Amino acid sequence: MPKYLVTGAAGFIGRSIAAALLARGDSVRGVDSFITGKHANLEGLQAMEFLEGDLADPAVCARACAGVDIVFHQAALASVPRSVADPVTTNRMCVDATLNVLVAAKDAGVRRVVYAGSSSVYGDTPTLPKREQMLPHPITPYAVAKLAGEHYLAAFNCVYGLQTVTLRYFNVFGPYQDPTSHYSGVLAIFCRKMLAGQQPTIYGDGEQSRDFTYIDNVVHANLLAASAPADKVAGRMMNLATGSAVTLNQTFQILCGLTGYQGAPAYAEARSGDIKHSLADIGLARELLGYTPSVDFAEGLRRTVEWYRLAG
Ligand code: UD2
Image 1 (cartoon, protein in one colour):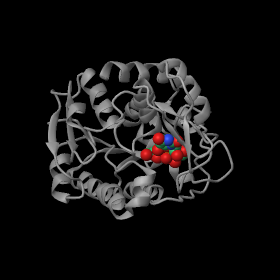
Image 2 (cartoon, rainbow, N blue to C red):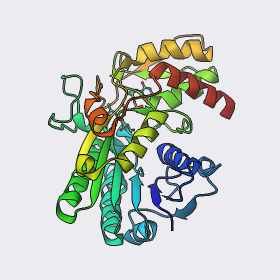
Image 3 (cartoon, protein in one colour):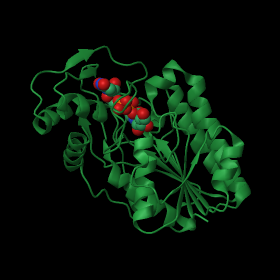
Image 4 (tube, rainbow, N blue to C red):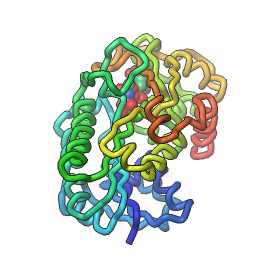
């Protein structure tokens, strides 16, 4: 029986966690609906038991959780603008799916669920860096849905004793992130376009900033969250980031150097629901997990560009 379940295993973050578990010899089950996950992301993960299905269906969740000890719940419809365009689907794929996973995990006797939270729950409040004790202030359907998931985790810890840990991801990037959708993460889009000599578009004035977090740091923190003592982490939520921010304009300049792109970006109207500045305090993850980011932004971006260059 697999010890670990990764939901969203054909997605960027899920496949990266699954690969790390397999590399250390663990048995893993993955589940994905392929609504946004990609078959190509499963390459190299043949040792993983794979289940195709939608977590909005409780029967899929029950099959996925059977016999599992720890769940990494990464499946979601990850995009702010997509949630603005279609809040009902975001709710189904983030809130309904998370609740179904938690019910199935409880019923199957799963010990711990580690959940992919989002920095978007802090909203557009001016105080930086973002600390966990700040009141959440979601301003988009996506942020509301990710926050609802967090609250469900904490409640399941309280009333059913399921060990739950939320990691609030801050703009994760790296190899395998899908660059092809209008709803993709900005760095994936920019890498692909600029390597192909195409002009990227910056929404707004480009002075918005993000605490971009390289995927290896996220994988590492998930493994720590799975093994940390329950008395430290069960029912808890913490930021997962690098603790430094760059603007999109700065990022564009760095990418010009890495990709060889010459020319200016296009500028377009700011996106609805966009947050101006996002920067994390990572002290709590440091304290509870012993987490420190091992790959900084510059090195992560260099590795990411190389990966997209080779991936074509
Ligand atoms: C939010 C969350 C992030 C994660 C993500 C999931 C915040 C601060 N961050 O990311 O943690 O949950 O949602 O999707 O809420 N942009 C351009 N050109 C493009 C694409 C994007 O300028 O072609 C801009 C966009 O307007 C934004 C920035 O780049 O200002 C980052 O956008 P994103 O979609 O990569 O991620 P974001 O910050 O909405």
